[in-house]
Length: 475
Image (cartoon, rainbow, N blue to C red):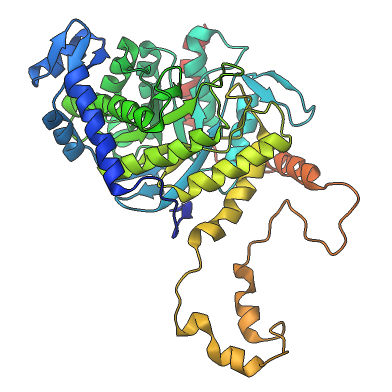
């Protein structure tokens, strides 16, 4: 079992009283102002448990929220595709895991340096790379291959991901019908739905629409996830000044209320079904009208959202390692580094969007490799200084070496020097060459992942069943 990054120091954004006040504001929005909830069976279930329904406006009291918080699992175990234990998030734990995309609208081609439409064959590249890199624990399969019919993009991408990736898969779906298909496909790989429920190697991704709107597709996706007991992220993505107020506390309160409504619905459908708290409160850039993925405010608020999640005792799904830049330039490197560091030190547990550029239009394999190295280095930072005691102070050693001595040849140094992080990409040569070697090292890493790394194959009977699905979908 891997534990990703285990942080021992942290970044605190909200004091306890501020968290409580934001939670109270969210409860007020849910009970007094209400939420727009679509879907007949969702409305009927909410009404059965005391919700007040007025058309699509639904009001729920804080008792329903409290019961949902009580029944939702506080720990999360996810497995590798072969059923072996892989990652675990425990209440109050400090485990951090990172994930990238297996597909996106565009690929920043590592061999040409140009952005181009993402193709189905690129999925294998991204999956092999993520499987090879030590610090990438999951991929997000979203179904955006430009050379696949939109009606079946979700299912085909998931099929390709499950064939080519052996860690955890986070999938999202274009519509409700494709979610049913995805559950069936994942059940085949697991050896049945019961096995999938007992040892989930996938989790679903779902969103409301800020402000405070839960459309039919969202409520149905939550319902299907809950009744099948598939872990599900519910993640509002808002933009301050556009789909949430131009105020950080107000934006946090709105997003918190949006998540809580989804949480309540899942726990009414199936008490104890696993849910992951997601929150993406960014800004509407008034110069360009884009929702920024590199804004400092965005990642400050991601850290704040993680603290709201920790207040409930629920695992948190964060965002980092992405940029508004189109290429892996100075802007991208600065934003990637800032985000990975801030989110690593926050209370986030599952961190997605590693390597995503151009405000979520493209994914860059080179950026994923760079972030993998940054994450490895930040493990040192996240561990902190460690214990301060007689052993670590090493006063007898300091006295033995004496003023003006050297520790280079001492056994104490030989025993411990490997604790220092040595980057696979960055140089500390006595005399650096006249050109950067980082880009070449990144490309060499991608080549090794693609040409040498072997992802364990699924058993032949499973591959045969997946082939049947592919034939059915593609006709």
